[in-house]
Structures are given as structure tokens and as C-alpha cells.
Image (cartoon, rainbow, N blue to C red):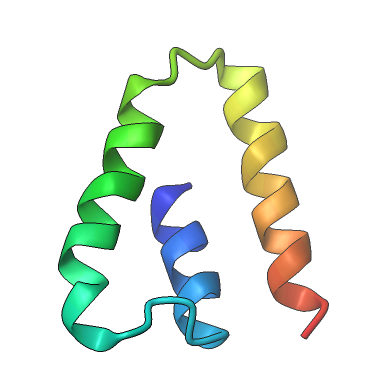
Amino acid sequence: MLGLCIKNLDEINFFRPKEKRPKMLENLRNIFYKMDLSDKETRILSGVFASLGKKR
């Protein structure tokens, strides 16, 4: 799910300026790893990110 999120963010050039990308990715990973999501919640979020990626 995190990979899908990062892919979609890359497609819209979210990580600007480029030199901040590593720290931004670290912060994003920390957010995801702190969440204690159920399997169902994980599937829901994955579907949301996939849908957002298709809208472009």
C-alpha cells in the first residue's frame, strides 16, 4: 500500500524539492508503520490510493 501511495505521489511530483524527497519518504513511512490497521482497513486504503491514481 505504501508503494502505491509513493508511486501516485511521484506521478504528481509531490516530492519537491528533490533534495527533501528522502526525508519526506522517511516521514511518510513512519506514518504508515505507526498505524495499526486491520486487514480490511488496509484494503480500503489501498483501494482509495489506486482510485486516486486512476483519476489522472
